Structures are given as structure tokens and as C-alpha cells.
Image 1 (cartoon, rainbow, N blue to C red):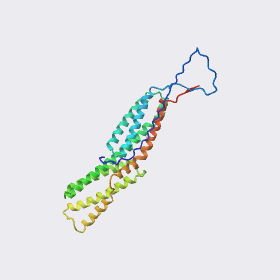
Image 2: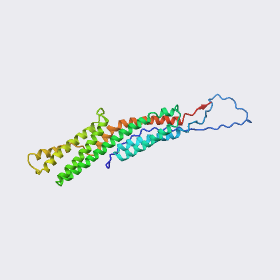
Image 3: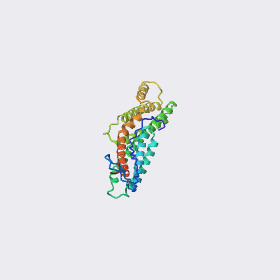
Image 4: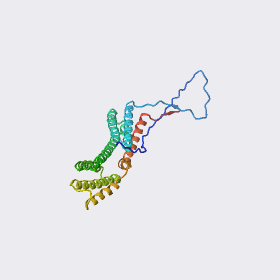
Length: 281
């Protein structure tokens, strides 16, 4: 969306960086053996032994985690195009991850660590796509209503009514997308906004139809119609804050939980790639 309300971006990615240190111990057989020390012996770090097949899996899981984070942050910024681009990157990362996991033995622990990623990513993709579609439909509705009022000021009633029909079509699509999420989920801000939009659109359509039939801006019928439009318009939210509220309500909690799941799986895979260093006494 062109106008964006920047919110604090959630980032739940867990990056595990385990630094390794090697210690070279040289022995000189010509020197006498030192006396036994009563202090604890120095630790000797043993080089890690990792599966080279895990590296591309780790990279794909990281790409998926970043794509998921970008999906949420883009929606919070009301940047629908960026959110859809992040979804496309996530799809590519998930496809790569699936391919790479297929190269592992069935009992490789990385398969268990990554088992939840396809389901989690699909949930993120589905939810984000619905939210992006709803935001797009609401934006198209607003654009059509603005066009209608522009035609109305010029007394172009047929064009005004046609624009309101386009606005109604956009609202129908938004309601269909809302229905996919189910009524069990509390989405008060979105449902309330849709109700206010419907009330305003209905009032404005009634007024424009009255005027399009040749009636003037006076008389007993005009007053109530005009008052209904004025009251409905006053009830509309001002600014873009309501859209940020809708994103947080519809997507924020669900996507944040999914981001946490991806982060845990990502950490497990990273731990397999970089296992703890064994110590020898």
C-alpha cells in the first residue's frame, strides 16, 4: 500500500554461532617429563565432525526463516507487494529444503529437526496471503469510493454509482477472504471496519440513486439521506492505523508463533551442523 504506518518489526530468528578454538600441543621427548600437577588438566579441543550434506540444508532453513520474518515485517509495514515477494522467496527456500532433505538417510536426525518446517511454512504462506488479499481489497474499495465521491461532486451520478458497485465488489472479495479464516477467530477490528464500510457505502448509494432520479438537494427525503451519509462518514476510522491493527489481529500472533517454530527447527539443524566440541582430558 502506498501509505504505510511503520511499526516495530518483530524478529524472532535465532542465530546460533558456536566458535571453536584449536589448541596445538607440542611435545619434546628430549626434555624431562614435568612433575605431575595437582591442578586440573588443560582441555584439549577435538575438531568437529559434521555431515557435509547438512550445510545446504542449514542454508535453506536460514533462507526460509528470513523469508518468514520478512513476510511479517512487510505486512506490519502494510507493504503488500514486499510481503508477496517474501512469500515467493519462502516457497523457493522450502522447495530447496525439501530437495536437500531427500539426500539424507532416513534415520538422519536432520529429517526430524526439519519435519515441522513444511507445515509451518504453509501456515505462514496461507495466512499471509489472505491478509495481503484483504488489505488489497480494502485499498481497492477505498479507491473506488473516492472516485465515486469525485463523480458525485460533479453530479456524474451514473459514474458515481458504477464506482460504488466496484467498491461493493471489492468488499465481497474481502468478506470471502475473511470467511476462509473462520468465525471462531476474534477479528474485531477487521469485522468492525467492514461493517462501517458497508454502512457508509449503502448510505452513499441511496443518496446518489435519489439524486440520479432527478431529485434536487432539498426536500423531506434528501435531508435524511444526506444525514445518513454524514453520520456514516463520521464513524469511519481516520488514518491508516486501523490497518496496522488489523494486521496485528489477523496475522501478528499466528505468524509470530510460527516464526518461533521455524527458529527452533533452525537452531536444531544448526546444532547438528555445529555439534558441541568434545573435550579430552
